[in-house]
Structures are given as structure tokens and as C-alpha cells.
Length: 127
Image (cartoon, rainbow, N blue to C red; front, top):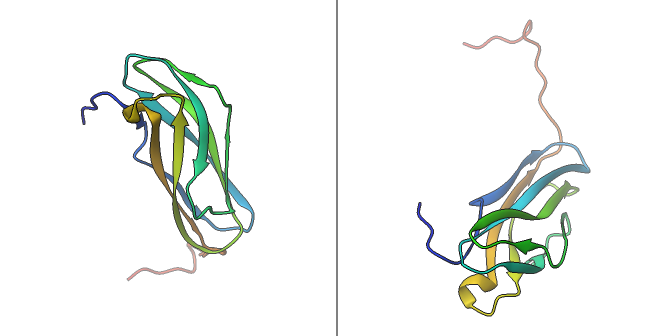
């Protein structure tokens, strides 16, 4: 799809997939596209309420995203400590005064299901 101006997330959403052991971690990069004529500085990257305690976000305040470029601006780490399906929103905020460039959001998904199924090919028959 064609994007016209503004600040956009480079990925449609962040999918941490299924975690099967307690404390298992997955790390994903958060990238944004600055489709405008001016450089932008990142002022904040945070989860919107309600905040999931299993999600941690790290970023460097002041990271510059050049005009008309895409850049990794943060890392999201999800640690599966509680079973279930989880979803939320991460907001990336910049120093722009124009609302089209002030912030963008990306949705994240994770599934935590402890355990696994093991089968032996010698003892398994599919009919």
C-alpha cells in the first residue's frame, strides 16, 4: 500500500508467537517510517494502558529518524510468566508539533501456553 506523509509503523503488528516455558523471552524490533520532509526525534516509546507487566520496552530518547527513512527505534521484550492470550498497543512519540508526525501506534500479540506435546514417529499412526 502507498503511504502518504506522516509517521507510520514499519510493521502491521508485533507477534511474539507462542511461548511454552515459564520465563521464555522473545525480542522484537519496533521500526517506524518517517514519510515526511523533516527529521524527527523519538521522545517516548511505551505501552498504552492497561500495561502488561510481561512486556518491557527499551529505547534511546532522542534517536533521530531522518526524513523519508525507516529506522529501528526500540526493542520490545515479552516474557511469558502467565498463561493466556495477550494483546496491547505500543505508542511511539516524537518531538513533532504536526499531529500527523507526533505519534504512531503498533499492536502486539502474544500467547503463553506452558507445556508441549511430544510424539514418537515409531509409535504414532495417522489414519
